[in-house]
Image 1 (cartoon, protein in one colour):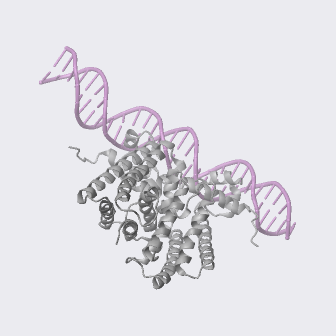
Image 2 (tube, chains in turn blue, purple, brown, red):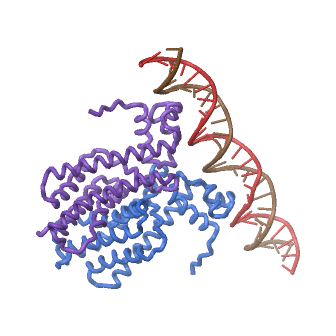
Image 3 (tube, each protein chain N blue to C red):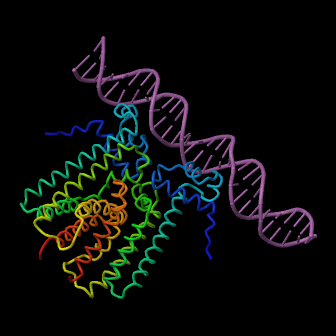
Length: 204
Length: 204
DNA sequence: TTTAACATACCAACTAGTCGGTATGTTAAA
DNA sequence: TTTAACATACCGACTAGTTGGTATGTTAAA
């Protein structure tokens, strides 16, 4: 199996990600990274040809984990109900619970961090982020279309923007919770999205 | 009236803000700022004792403009209806229209930019941002409470989180629209918020 | 003549990245 | 089974260039 030996490589990446989420990529030095990771400069450049390459490997890893997390949560929700609306509502609830179960403040989103400094990165890096967001759009939109067929919405809605809204709420609440030091904001906003879906599709 | 003589001071601040929104504060050099502003280094340090002080003056100005914009839009909405629900719906629509009327892509939010690199700034700077967000919460919450008195909501809602949701949607759509290069996302999401309010409070 | 508003030249600290070197394997021919 | 050849994983001093900031002008208006 794929064991987790905490290799030097992952130690560097973990340290870098945590510092970048607090200082931004441009405000993060490789000296700071290697100090936190407890490795030498030689080790750093043995594994990464440049700071920029580390930046790319970081989003790549983040995007992969994000996609896997998305699929797993989707599968989980689909396993708990046969009805598409219920699946979607459970899907949102699962994220809500996950956030609530965190004891530490949410560390932030690497995508948003990079996007706030987009000129520091080349296009293929920004494309990775773009693809990740389009994946969310596609997967959620697919579910919403199945809901729409079964439950005619109370109002005319653009399903694509309704799909986007989930990620919008994630990213937006990360910003608010970061500023106000209130972790519960994220869960509260997910609940608002949940309620909005209910009001749109549920006959009460 | 308040004329705009484009002083050296504001030229520096405008250049700095535009660069910071693309590169982040840590990725922005004062050389880059003075080049874009077309002024010398002497001029820069004549007006700002340090890069950090410029950073503070920038958020301060941004927060002041933000607060004024909030109040003005609120006053405008209140002038267009006597009913609190209608006022709130108009309030959201005004922002929607404003965004739609932009021809260039939205430049981004300085608050979010700073928050993504919060460790680069000291607490009084982050407090300015915090206060700005609390102002939005307070002003919108006030309106929502008046709505609630007149229109019993269809579902039990936490009004504070519903107030926060507006800023959440702003910040979240800025992120999405930045990544997907779709300016319309912001207006679409504001429309979703608008619809959510209607579904909650309007008897249809 | 004084002073605010700049400009130019420069500095010390820091930054990303390099380089020569070592320690510890792995492999495969003798 | 020994051993020479090679590979991988690291170390930390060093460098060339960049950075925020300063010191010392100049100029034009009050």
